[in-house]
Image (cartoon, rainbow, N blue to C red; front, side, top):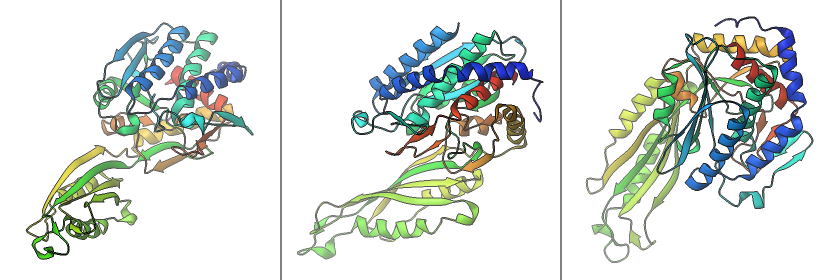
Length: 391
């Protein structure tokens, strides 16, 4: 996919002009959706957000709409519009309705606009990306343009907590797709597209020893904390920054009181790597850990959550074609690799060409400083509309 079919410059200019005229409407939609707080662990809240998105898309086009039921997280939303050429595989657009912010965050982190930036919880990751998808579709409809491929939007409710419920939906639809576009924000204020991501694994290592009074009966105890500390030092040394491998012991819990030899302790670990072989190798090493104290047992749970998204030749070609399409819209796109994961990891691992970071440009994700650029938002949305039309 070194190039895309020729796009009439007048058509691209028309889409861009229409979207520039929709900036106020886009901003109003963004404010409304940011105001619909949707933390991943609150199913009812995520479902409310999904319903707003469903209603907006239903009003924007004649979609085949299906709700995907999930018991412990927000439901998924599947929207499909047939294309002009039924022989072509679908184009899959991935997004998510959940955010990392608990209900009530808006009270001290309200939506606001200042100096061509929009601020608020989830504004960049990824409420603005969802708005882009809606208005890209509306731009095509307003211009009377019909995509060549069938377009499937899949919006999930658990991306921020690992996509355990939605992974099967994503992979099922990716197998029918010729290309996948991901609405995660671009990297940094320049909004670089993402052509490679690290794979991710998460583990909990637990140690179980023997409790005892630390003053009266110290020697009969077997400290889970001491054994766990030794293993933490051991596994932390497995990180290899030169290879892009990081193993981070991030959260430690253990013990009951300072005068009690700890019977239990645990550590949560985050493992990331560019190469599948590195993830699999360290997964085996973690599962093979042996306690240095025979009185203390070890147990490890968890595993590989997201496979790496490698920069394949197909992804590189897709980026090059997208970059060429963006230039007439005033966007000089660059590509990047990132240690963060997304649902694009799953689709890329299936061998489907996947381009990530097609949402807004911004910074401060998952923090009180989260914000996105409004000046590049309409042209990036125009680019998305052009991709829907031309891929």
